[in-house]
Length: 187
Image: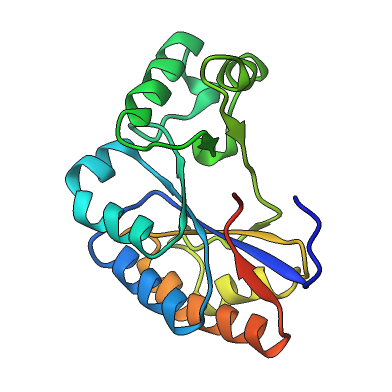
């Protein structure tokens, strides 16, 4: 990550855009004067183009999260790269986050090679908001127990994560604001 003068926490949201969750995230980020990176699924961008434009219009960063949320460890390289390229038709960004954090060395090398010029971004804190077995309070604890300047937090703007995201995100944003930490996107 780039060196910054101010203590900075990097926010990211995977799997959107989603009609309810993404709108909520955008409102929360605006309320706390925070920026983030949204790693979007191509098919969700195609289904929700107005929400995708709202992300961009608000000055947030965007990234590719494949067209169909493929697991790189369970998908052949050529199929995976085709899915990445298909999403790139909807998502004008060289930033990439592999779904599930699963990508083979060959897939990563090919995405980072010319002409793709993709940059792969992972995370340091997995909120667990996607896990329907954990409580919203446990999701919050997952973030707050490890958060510090330089952390890259991943949340999910999706229906599956909604209950935990709705509870956790405002509290994380408030925690960071109280620490005087800058909240930014990765790019």
